[in-house]
Image 1: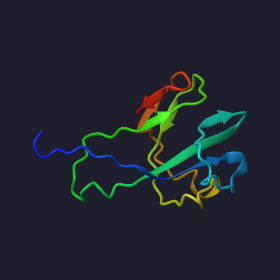
Image 2: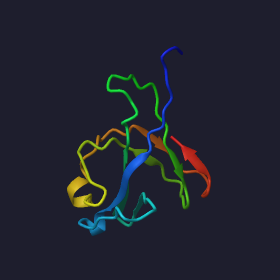
Image 3: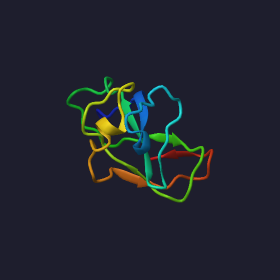
Image 4: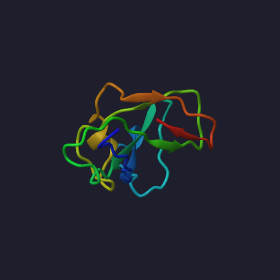
Length: 118
């Protein structure tokens, strides 16, 4: 369509949060975890560099790719984070409730090692 441009917005920061270690920061790890086990929750957070998108741009769609290493049959819910956070400062205690309760999307991870887009 005229005037439409596809662009890539790379991840600029990521970390994961764990309820049982609520003040620990995991911004220096390369893997991201998402799981619920024995009442202990783990969530990942991502921030994207949107500087290549003009301020008044109309975004029609967005896609994120995740590479699954270990999976089960539980669905993963993707929520929008509603507060600012820092890669090396974010923890469960200071961010765990700062997201929209309604998921933007949900997906069930495929067989480990398979790429997944959502």
